[in-house]
Length: 162
Ligand code: THU
Image (cartoon, rainbow, N blue to C red; front, side, top):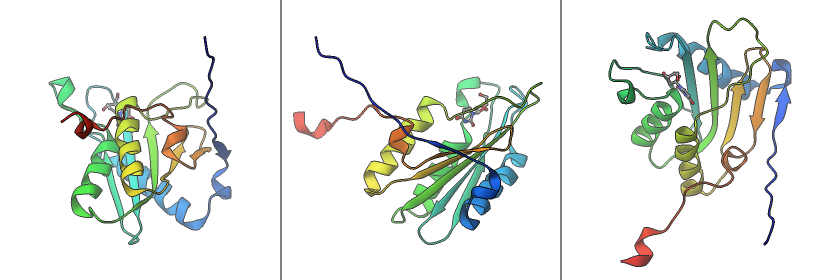
């Protein structure tokens, strides 16, 4: 038997420890959640993607009465930036959430499906994507690479068998 382990790294920052660009995209994600269509969960999510041409593409979660038909804010923002700016690199992704929790001592991180989409864009572009997650206590979780959020993703070269 061989035992293995993976270490992931992240930081917890106060909002005044963010640089100007980080503040801008975190604030963009916070504004984006206002357009959340979440009548079923009442859980609002905003996501903003910063590209290397300076553009910020933002989105919010969109739900549907046929529950699986809805989509997370992160994926809408990533797919929109991939569709509109396919040749641009993603520098950062900021995520904010809003919900009527009784305590603000709660950490929310992206779902597995969104992490899988993030890691593919990171691998495709060959450079790291910084992920900034605004917590309910206003502190920011900072991941320097998507690999720290999904260190063991699904990844296979299907062309090898054809
Ligand atoms: N949601 C996101 O937008 N991003 C995530 O990473 C997880 C969950 C949305 C989906 C749904 O509209 C609501 O949050 C509750 O799951």
